[in-house]
Image (cartoon, rainbow, N blue to C red; front, side):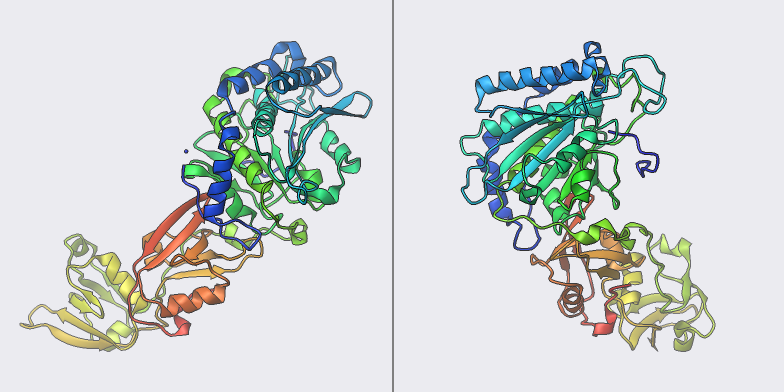
Length: 526
């Protein structure tokens, strides 16, 4: 991976429903597709991955600097590895694309099996070069030592070799063709991928999807940097649907920058995804060696790439590039994730010591508040508040206050008064049933994105967070934010939501009051 000074990088089997437009498969058909390709998936071998990385990141290749003796030896090793794979499977002959004098892209085109779709191509690439002995312009130091680049990018290169064997071993190849590419001179400035885009061996209009694999060898806590998900509508649920067992945590990046070989394709208007397992202290240093690779993680990442490629190459259609992705700012729901303070509807503070005893006792009453107007006093203990009854939790009381419609019946016990007192309050503001706001997003069809969550609301208590993508409500996808609003305000609870968060899919149940609320009750489009 090329170092980029303005980069923002500081910071197994249940298949799930892909809830996007008609171009995306149903959960059943997606499962059928991956089952059909499971024989290829089984070919991804951790020992082969290890062998490739150890060789590519050995001192004999002198850091694989583009155009150097070690760089040329790298291409020779890749061609030998392909010859070995060809002895076991039907791998077509590779093509060497020379450019810039001493640079070499290595290309393997696996033809598709469908007469109508084989002219559409999925591109899978990884750069095979690194920075040699290091220079001040490309090394974090120290200089003069072999920078083996085990993670950057022997790991991605090894993954592509395994993917070639996996797909070429299939009895029934994918419908679309797959171009496997080993890019040269990425560390010099993405020169290999730029050269191919400028001098394509396949017309660019035939490319349906690009997957770039760069630095897959340091998987930590499942985190995967995920770039380009806004380049086509529905790519995010596509990525999440193949995150088996919710193991990976997809760290979606809002911007696409020119730091790896996905960018030339992205700039050319082709849907492109870049995956990496994030930078580390050994990045562009001599210490990026094979002994620091997470081998199990590398296998997980290669298998994940296989599932994405198999699906993308078998769909009857694939979404087109979103031109807005080139210029749109990051969506605001990705920037702000704090809870929104709840509105003041009653106007009291509570005795926290008594709450711990499950006694809801008023400590203070705000002057002029609905509580004051209703006749509540400090020291009063609530017995009933609307649908809430004593011995229910304080959290439930807070949610009830937010959701209650006027007028609200209240029963209290007051010191010195022998029997409970009945009061009526008219609360401030509108009732809030769910306590969340949501928006449509053109990159996320047939879903809505949570843009606001009110503290103490049913949504907050159920664990809904800003940035959650609501894939389905009551088992059905959502056509728009207006549909979400209508259903939240009219349907009985509890609400059953399927959400996607960080590439992981969860089912959440939200307990809400069964009192129907008028349309104004929905908190949407904040």
